[in-house]
Structures are given as C-alpha cells and as structure tokens.
Length: 68
Image 1 (cartoon, helix red, strand yellow):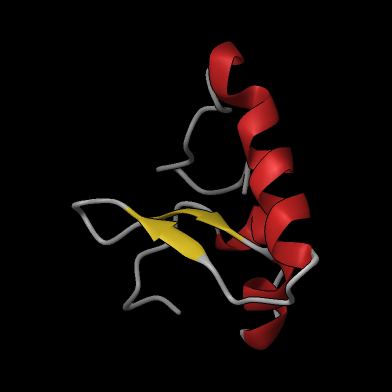
Image 2 (cartoon, one colour):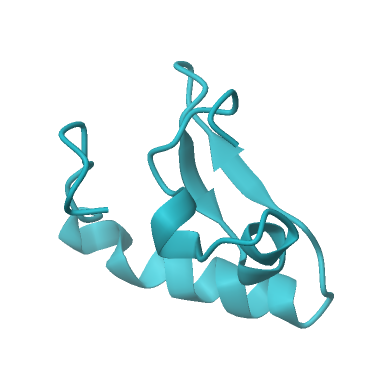
C-alpha cells in the first residue's frame, strides 16, 4: 500500500496489538469481519475477508468499499 498516495499511517502504538487480537479471535471462528470508517474505507479486515476478495489484509486496508 506504500505506492498509494492516500496511504494510511500504521496503527497508533496503543492499538498495535488490537489488530492481532481481533484477527486471532475471528480466525478461531473463521468469520469474515472488517471495520469500515465513516468514509467507507476499510480500516481492518480479517485474512478470511481479504481472501474472499483475492487480496491480503494489508492491501485491502485503506481502500473504499467501491474499490473492492
């Protein structure tokens, strides 16, 4: 995502572990989960959801729902 001009910064330090925690929690259930902000940008997605779109969680982050 570094090649995108509207690339988002990394998660702030207090939230750095939260993404891994949610991923582990959802991975145990195999669910498709994402967090989409008010501008319809994907801020978080599980590996299962990213795979659904044929992408990685890193490449899906920051994209709008329309882009998917």
